[in-house]
Length: 101
Image (cartoon, rainbow, N blue to C red; front, side, top):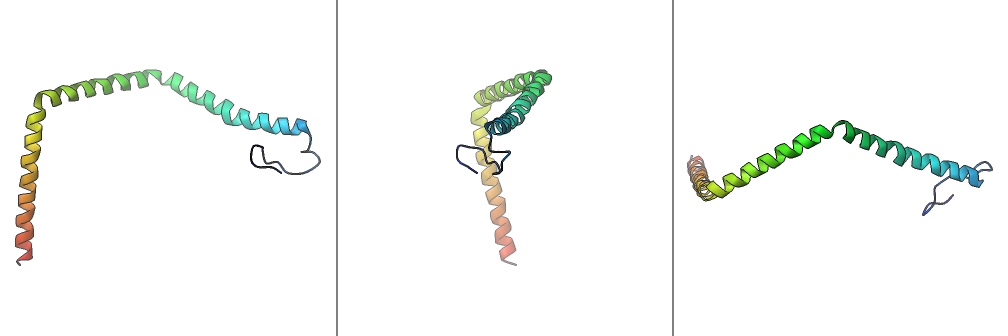
């Protein structure tokens, strides 16, 4: 039985032949790589238009978002500063009045 660099096979008379070792290797690689990768490729082939539409929609949203940031970035920044200050102000009053009770 070997581990590093080899397949683990039981030690018996029928497994010690090179034909059996080659059969194990081919079965392993056909199962692992053959069916799985073919299945992945077939799934992508079946859903290529969904992937294409998703890419186009994501590109459209990204372009629109970058345009909005370019036009309204300064306003959005100042609004977020003001809202953060208001939230801290309200939380401070809440903490002050709840601690004084």
